[in-house]
Every structure is written in C-alpha cells, then in structure tokens.
Length: 130
Image 1 (cartoon, rainbow, N blue to C red):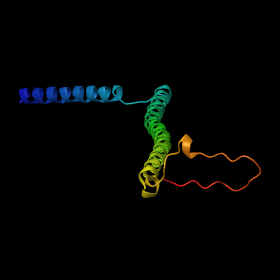
Image 2: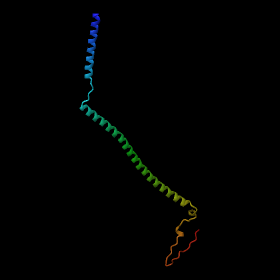
Image 3: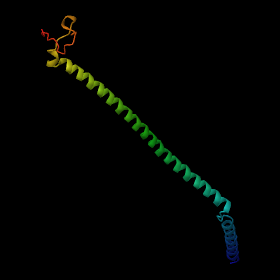
C-alpha cells in the first residue's frame, strides 16, 4: 500500500510540477503588442495600400494617355484622308472634264485661228470653226 501511496504522491507532485510549468509557459507566451509595434504595423499597412492605389491609378493614367495619343493620331489621319480625298476629287474632276463629250468637241487654238481686232470696232470677227 505504501508503494501505491508513494506512486500516488509522486504522480501528484509530477502533475503539480507540470501544471506550474504550463502556467509559467502560458504566462511567458502571452501575446502582447506594444504601441511601437502597433504604430509600425499601421505605417506598413498604409504604405502597402498607398503603393497598390498608385499602381492601379498609374495604369489608369497610362491608359488615358494612350487613348489621348490615339485620338490625336486618329484626328491627324482623318485630316490627311480629307486632303487625299480632295486631291482625288480634283484629279477625277479634271479627268472627267477632259473625257466628257463636250470637251471632245472643243478645238485646239493655233496661231492661224486667232484674229486680233484693231481699231474701234467692238464686234469680234467670226471665224469658221473647222
């Protein structure tokens, strides 16, 4: 019986010893945040949020700048297209004027066909066409 009592006392002492260790361990592992750590973590958090915001807004600004450049390039190309269209219309108008039936019936002037009037006569001298 004595051995049982001794074993029981020994187990009781070991249990008390383990309980004291766990209490001390729990007391030493208590999580505490000092004000310096809290302020530092807040500053780091604010810096990360700022960097992310600047990153996303930078991408948006870059897209806006690209769109603005493309709009300016589009306007330039439209102006060039209008100039080319005007030149094309002028060339086509000249070509159509030269190939029209009315232009084909016109005659070329030569020195022999030109008559200068001298004097006070206001009437032009009629010259046969062909």
